[in-house]
Length: 232
Ligand code: ADP
Ligand code: ADP
Image (cartoon, rainbow, N blue to C red; front, side, top):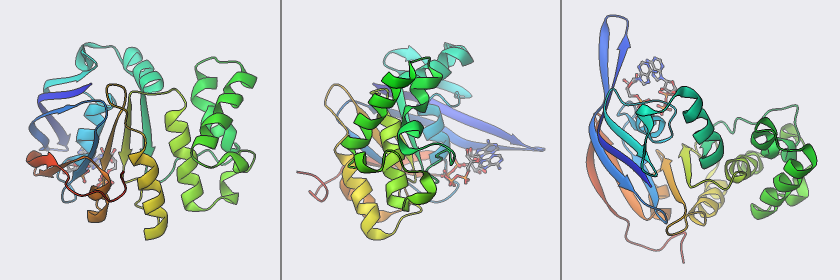
């Protein structure tokens, strides 16, 4: 489904070049919930951007469902992100002037779907994350956990094959983090959908099926997660 093949990413910072990712190969398939951990600055966000078609590798390849991302135009990559990849961020990134349902429906509205159909689908997704009763509320009327549920619903609105999360529990307390992690753990479907999450929270890895540890732009360890917390 998602594949990096000897991918590197080099940034220029003034006169300095930074090798943020230094040759990573990863293969992620439907049904997996992959947790990516590593020290700050080790290249986790950059990896996520490569997998999510937000950026392209300097060398090597990033492949989504058999399509080489670096051969696609910016327009094609942006359509891929809109229609086939969902994103969840630490800061929720909801628009304050839109209701929950409108925030969730926004990707569909931007894609040209009729307002009524898009809002119906938005409400349906909110119900899936137990936020149906808050569909007409604005973000500033919601708790952090509720806002993140809305953001997860928005990530699901196009029924994406990959859901990519960057520190999704970074702004949440422990109990609320667990709720969001349980919600994310329920999303992968074998042969259909994978979830990838970057996190600093060591207890979050237990919710995943696989843990990838990154250090200095390289994969340091990669293996299945033993244990059943958050699953089953
Ligand atoms: P992490 O997510 O593990 O904290 P990042 O992927 O954000 O790591 O960053 C890895 C390295 O790449 C850091 O040294 C960071 O400063 C650098 N970096 C990341 N993004 C950019 C960018 N857009 N421009 C320049 N340097 C960047
Ligand atoms: P993280 O929370 O994973 O450490 P950061 O807060 O370092 O991520 O980075 C947030 C955003 O800024 C990312 O999109 C990253 O690519 C970008 N970024 C990080 N470092 C730099 C940098 N030195 N110059 C420009 N952009 C950067």
